[in-house]
Length: 423
Length: 144
Image (cartoon, rainbow over all chains, first blue to last red; front, side, top):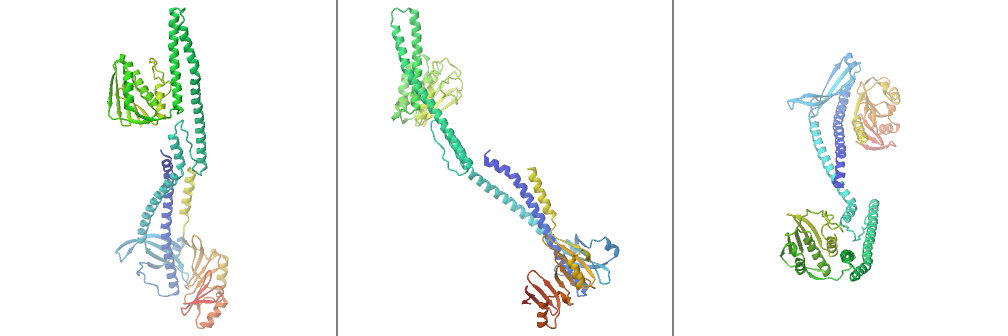
């Protein structure tokens, strides 16, 4: 789940809760306030009536246009004793204009006349409008709060996204980062945490690059330094073999030794070549026709591996030429083809497709699909060691592709291992 | 989280608990002392019909109605804010001297039936239904 989504999700519940409480409180306040307003009216009305009645003035019509009604009745001493003096209640009263009962707010007030007798004034105000107002308020409050919730969410999402942008920049940078292509992150932020993150990531990139560079130089230097002693050693063996005094068995041993020596020299050369590619020492580029290169290589290899009885099909769909180093391209194609022959079974097939921008080589094999993550590792030979493979062929292919900005993909389909080189 | 919920619940309960408005009948003895002194001074023989305590969120006041329909209002401390005697003249001592002088000069026939004391001014109603407004320094500023 994305960070923004996560944050918003954990924000929704408390916000809904707060808003619901807020809405409830608001609603309760408002309906209370409405009742208070009516009570105020009742109070003013009853004060006016009590005073006019006491002063002996003319009282207003009991049932005037406002629908306010009242009546005054004497109260016994017993009743006075239990009454609270001022009482409010909700009651349904009969409204003649409506010909039916309507809810009303009623106020009872006890007061005394000069002769000491107690009287009760009852005033009533119909409140059917109040109920309508309250339901309207309820609807509007709900709509408003939901709208507010959405707006708050939207604003939060926007703000959050804006502020976490540097984080996504760092992640994107790390996704695109490959060892050997040193590229540091620009510290384009004022947020301390993100600055820290950038600095740390940059420091790690530097460290990795340094270690990588170190390793690369070491392999290059080592294989370079090994060249001369290896060559001398081989020469010595050759010279020794020319000695007539050697017995047959000694000669055989020496022959085996020389074969091993040759393998060692070949391995060393491959390593040197690999490190040269990685050090970008093949700089000159020319227009290389992949089609021509392929035909040339297949001619040679078909002869070499004739004994395996492999059928080769080339589907030359379209010409493909790229601007690259010829030696590298040649090595690339030859390594791929060699790979296809070497890991094939006798009477197998090799299908080659060339189109504009892509070359696919598919071969049958006794082996199952290979782990694509380890396939291009140096000295990775899968789960077999019987072939005369150095384990460096596909590493070279990968290195050449990286150096020539080509892409190599491996798929396993219909029992065929397919390597595709594309632009 | 639980703590926050508790605080919110408390706030809500508090909000609901505060009843905005209330009228409560009280006895003469429950009035502030100042108000009782005022009544003893200016209305020594009048019987009360009804005394109410008016509680609002920010204010507290007292209304008193006499059996003849006269009304007196007091503020929280017991200072009078309104005396309304409908048709009878209000007790003489209540009205500030400067005001009663001005009224005697301009309306010699009339009596003061109602006087209101507000924050910045006095409002006086006369028996001839004229309403006068005085400012703090007892100068007449409005006639209605």
